[in-house]
Image 1 (tube, helix red, strand yellow):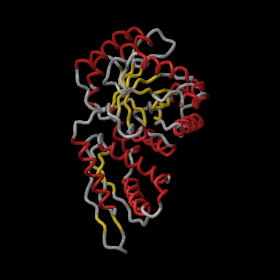
Image 2 (spheres, rainbow, N blue to C red):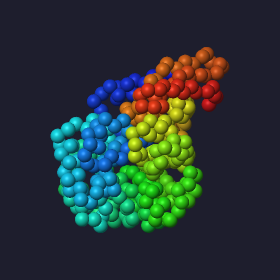
Image 3 (cartoon, rainbow, N blue to C red):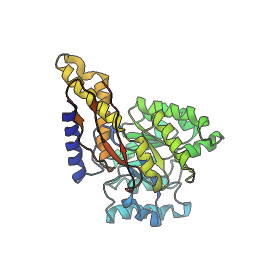
Image 4 (cartoon, rainbow, N blue to C red):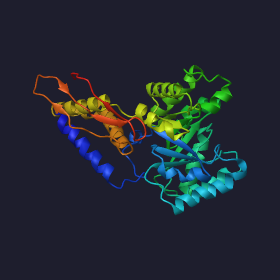
Amino acid sequence: MFNGAFRRFSKHTHRLCSSNFSATAKIGDNLARPLRSVLFTPGYGKHLKKVKRSIADCTIIDLEDGVAPSSKDSARSAVAKMFKEESVGNRMMTIRINGRNTEWRDKDLEEISKIERVDAIALPKVECADEVREVAEYLAKNSASKNMNLWGFIETPKGVQNVDEIACAHPMLSVLVMGTSDLSRDLQCLHTRDRLPLLYSLSKCIVAAKANKLQILDGVHLNLDDSSGFEQSCRQGKEMGMNGKSLIHPSTIAIANWFFGPSAEEVELSFRILEAMSEVRLQVSNLRSFFVVDGERRRLKRGRACALSTDISLKTCTRRTQGESFRCTKLFNLLRTQRTREISVHSKDFVL
């Protein structure tokens, strides 16, 4: 039973990985698209040249905080020129524009909306639903790419207060991003390892995102010398329900992918549940809508999508004769660091 499902997953994953996959294509529903690692890149100079070499699931080209006021216009032009003249690969690309009340926002929208290769426009410091609707209406009127989505940064107390309305503001909104650094400053709270001062804000935004079928990304970890603290924040974000983490340095990509990607045990269990349900469904006609099946399908979609952007080696799994224990050996070989050190994950024997 499980071997058949596993072979189908391996075959489908190999086909996707070997094809000329476009990042602008839709990968199932929004929740299936992997955003484990989202790397910020300033929108100017030498940083732009590194975009196409990034191994993050998504790159955010930043025209807001990452660019000085005197360089806003030149940065915008440089980004547009890069997308026009160079290939940026198949990775997902998002551009964060300047805020609603700035003199650069309208020019950013006018220029960025013309770039078909951009997957999403990120709106900084969103505090009300009208900010999202306003941009969505502009994009619709100006015939922007149908694949272009909106991301909303929640990084102020007012944004947290209104996040329920923001999350359902418009169908184009697909992702919420926590701006924990600015939020901590406005809340006048301390940066602690356990992030206890931010737990209410994080939890409220997670609930709003999940209730509206949006993905939500955890905030950046600023101290690059604190590797254990970074892993702790990744683990905490994963446990709370975050879909991925925003990053400020390429050295943290592999660790974020490791924490926020589906584990071998999760993939194995999903296959076994779906296979068992497919057998029972023959006898129970209304089981198709059973919530367990829908949940496991989404988990497998995420697994397939992650295989597009991570080196995953799927080995042959074996099952002994009926009555004996099932064991899947070496289901995943994930690269914990950037294509250097291999870590094998072995699943444990269990009975469904």
